[in-house]
Image 1 (cartoon, rainbow, N blue to C red):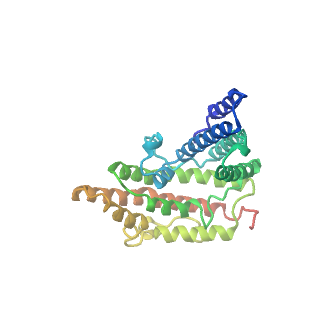
Image 2: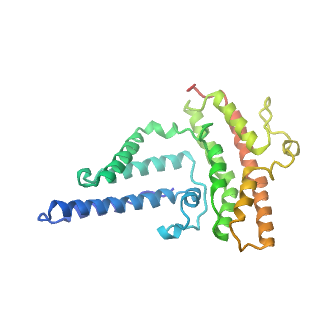
Length: 290
């Protein structure tokens, strides 16, 4: 994850200090509002640049914001990465509170209040291990397929990035596993009923199962159900989205479809299977039943 650039806060403070005392209130307000707008854009770019899924899900042309697209990643989910994100949000809060709220527009004041409330909610250091990455409602195993399936393709580069994101899933899920293990050691792992629900969702998504009794994977050939790759949302949606690129040749389309199915088979499904095994191994270690 990228860290917040301290130069933003220094720039804001220096501009406020250097404003001539003879300026009228309207001029001071306009300056503060312009600085706040610049802060919001800079913060937006820095936050969205932390993973390619956010970039591709939200922006059609990331280059417009000067975003570098060379580092294709699903993000950092290690305990250390979560700590870095927490520290970054603290720095963001300091920068934010340097603004004079009274000089902002009514809309900016609303944005200011939302961001301050969010930042202050992260000040409790214990929050670092309270994140529920595996929530049955909106955990990573639920959100990744939904977000990936909705990423639009405008260029061949978009398709290539998407395939790299699928290939990055084993690394991302390995990091999620490290976070879950840290939660378990702290007594903060999810309750058993939530583990069962998440495993059920994962097995429905992949068309594969993990042995219920031994907690070990069954043979891959036995696990794989007929057509589970071809009928998976990441296959069906991918082929639909290819239709948006009218200049794709038939051979290119065929190659992309095969590459996508290979990525699901070789990266996505194994990542889900291995994370499922981690969940089963940690089941029973959670002390929180909420």
